Image (tube, rainbow, N blue to C red; front, side, top):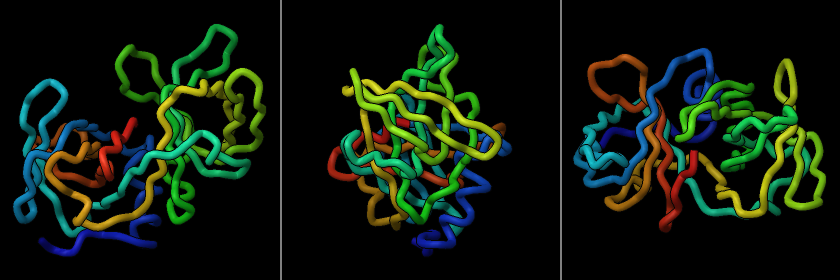
Length: 199
């Protein structure tokens, strides 16, 4: 397999591609069935097998399980959430970005988790209040959102990785250009040691 983009070059490009609301993406979630050369087969949640092409520009990340206590003021996070009647957001999952990925997908925009109306907010944690669960203020360029984070939401960390994390049985989230006839991964997140990337 050709070398797949990692490290600081990955971090720089992520901020303008994967998770960036300016670039419409298709998100494929599933389990890796096989990896052969520059092709990966993922079994999607609907049972369909999806061929995924990898290129030397594909950005590979690895997700590992974490705890909500790992989120600190100024942590850079991505939080998928559902809107609440009082104008706050209720977190459905929390992703803690490795420092090399700070700035990835900065902002607040629509997301496609089941149930409809979900959003993604990527930004720096401005404050954390602990009562029943946690309330966080997430600051991003041009605004901020208040997010209520229940204690039982899934939390992962993600960091740059290489193709060795693409193993049969690993859960994966693939980001590819919207509207393309086939799936070519701009970026993908693979779960390590049974981790399910919740985004």
